[in-house]
Image 1 (tube, one colour):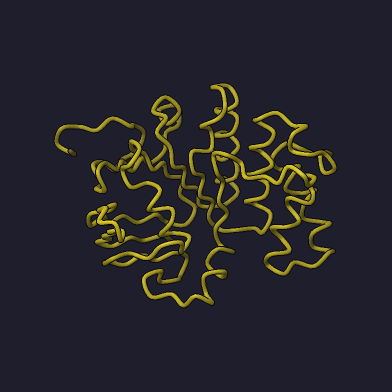
Image 2: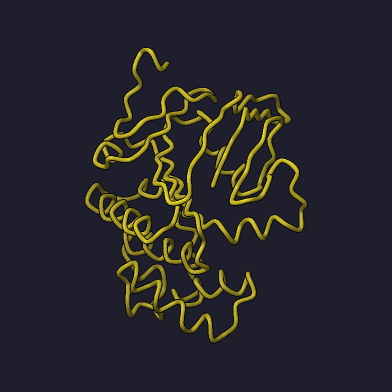
Length: 230
């Protein structure tokens, strides 16, 4: 479960990124977090992964209090969260297998676990047989699928996707979102951060809307902000 309670985040340069926001995401939910650039979406991701801590308020992530967490515990939290980025962040000089293996090595997986897990997650994302190919040999959509496989490889309970379709055409974007929906159906909590209204409106999911560091809407199935929610 993820819970933010009265969370304020002010950066050292004086930027007020979040202004007392509160929301809860239950285990197994699929949630869109939407809003314009500068609305506070990226700060929320950083709070969930322990990159920053709140100025005030409380952030709970899968049983960990991110407000008071010890440095040595942050890797434990990050094992429960798989993160997908817009720019893929694959290492071009390494094969698909090695890109995924690095993520497993980071949490102490054995060679046997790596050898068995990687083919499974690649099959799950529709990329069986590409283990020895390099990222530059793949299309943009395939590279994003590799990035999703890397996020899944350590079997996290939560997937956070940060603008996962920002570099893809509409058809590939829909494929990626459908894949994330499938992953959610297998039991993972999925949080998709995006500003793509058209894509969000194709899925009947919960939408949390952020503007200027505040929540301006929280409901199922629509990106639009009603006047009584602003």
